[in-house]
Length: 107
Image (cartoon, rainbow, N blue to C red; front, side, top):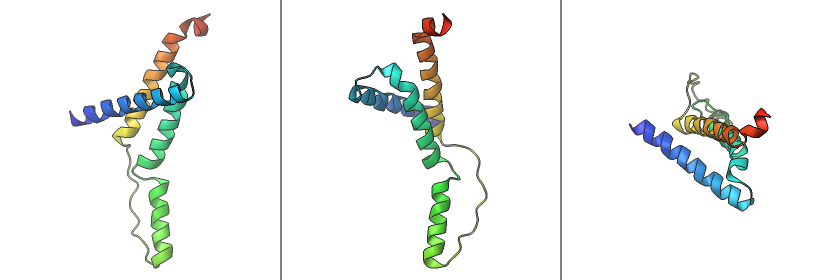
């Protein structure tokens, strides 16, 4: 139940931020939704993946400053709920865009 709430809140938060971005650029919500969702996926992948470049960079920075080598950790698979919520938001916006512009795509 807690995971479903986190996913729902992530999707709602992305929709809210997307709406603010569409107001800022004076564009349609549906027109900005796919690029915004792709940017959100990229940013969330970089910062929330369990074995990411940022954490490895931090380990190397600590090793360079202290001379103490951090114990190598195993690669951990899986993604965070925020990343999964962003992917779900992308799929929803992709379907909504196709439905909204179906006449353009079909004819």
